[in-house]
Amino acid sequence: MFARSFIRAISLPHKIESLRVLSARYETTVAKSASTPDLNPNILDLRCGIIRHVIRHENAEKLYVSQIQVGPQENDTIQVCSGLVGLVPIEKMQDLHVVVVNNLKPSKMRGVKSEAMLLCADGPDRVIPISPPTTSVPGTVLGFSNVPKVELQDKRKIKSKAFETISNDLHVNALGQVTWRDGCILHAIEEDDIVNPDTHCMVKPFSPDLEGAQVR
Image (tube, rainbow, N blue to C red; front, side, top):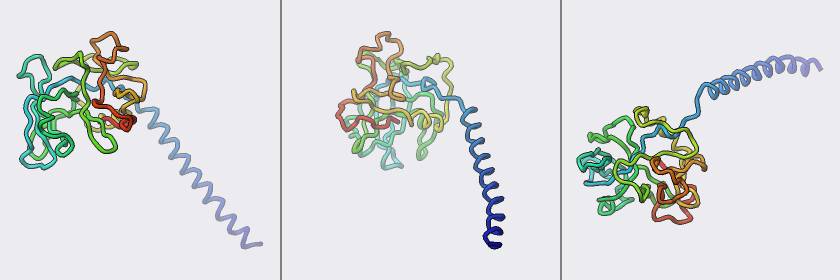
């Protein structure tokens, strides 16, 4: 009896301390959640582009180096490294219409500068570059419906970590559209007709196995 009482006497303070630790961790988690604002996907500067020139990276087997037109003039180009070798044939990359994340901080990939990234759907057995709206031209600005707009001049350079947080909720829906948190469709923001699928960013060609694929 004494032994059991002794064990209980020791265990009770230990349990109380454990509860205090768990409570403190919970309060810290809640505080962090409250202090972290919900990201707006429209902080991304998403543009329509055309790949004008593409070569294999000299020092990286899996990388293409592309010159992408993102403005009305053919010399409005940026350089982008993309890990699509073996996933998209180089002949299909040439003159491909793409969606570009245009405000990531530039980085060097095996010694070659990359100024942006291509938005792609990561399917179960293939990766497909996202197609911009059929109504678009190089430089057309894209945005998400049903969330606050962010003016182009207010879109700052962001770190890859911020993009990763947003892309965790970017997926392909049952219609092949790119959506954020299911209800926000990526479309040409200059077009008022959000219902018109020609203004939407799509996965082409689309098949049912691509529904739910992450976009990044």
